[in-house]
Length: 201
Image 1 (tube, rainbow, N blue to C red):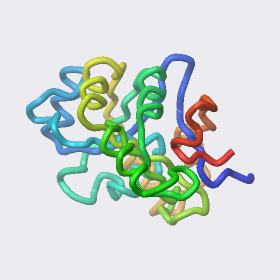
Image 2: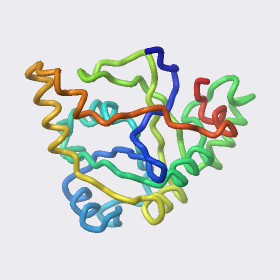
Image 3: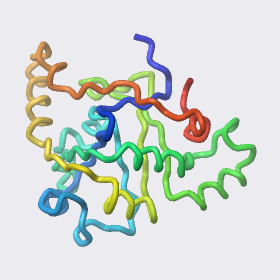
Image 4: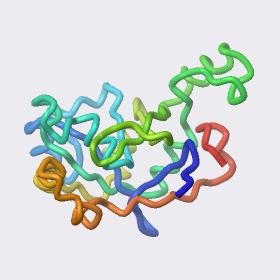
C-alpha cells in the first residue's frame, strides 16, 4: 500500500479521535480517577504532546518500559472539533521552505501559535522506522487548557494491552498481532489548513 509521506492516521469515529500519551503512575492514576488531567500532578504550564499513532507511542515509551515517567500508556479519546482546532491553530516545529516565505515569518507564526506540529518516521511492530511519517501535536498555553477542560471524552489505561502485544512480538508470535493493534485509517482533514501542517496530498 502506497502511504503518503505525511498523512494523519488514527482510530476515530464521528465524534472522537484517539491519541496516546505516556506518563508516570502518579499522573496516570490521577487522570483515570478524574477523567482528565488535573494539576498537580499534571503540569499545565508545560507543552504536552499527543500522538494518534499507537506504534509511534510505543517507540517513544519503549512499550512503557523506557523510564518511570512513561511507564503507563494512556489512550485518550478527544473530540474531533478539539483535534481540528489544534491543527488549525498550529505551527510547524521547524522552518520549512514552501510553507513559510521566510524564517522570520515562521518565527512569528511560532510565537503566536499555541500548538506545534512535528512529523517523525512512523514505526513498524518492531519499532523500526518506516518511509512515511506520523504526526505529533504539541499543546501549550490555551491549547493545554482546552485539551484538559473541554476536549477529553474518555481516558483508558492500555498499559497491559501494550505489554501483551510486546510479549507476542518478542516471542515472534505475529499472526494475532494485527487484530490487537488499533485500526488506524486516514483522517479527513479540511483543505483550509493542509498546507499549514505540511500534509502530503
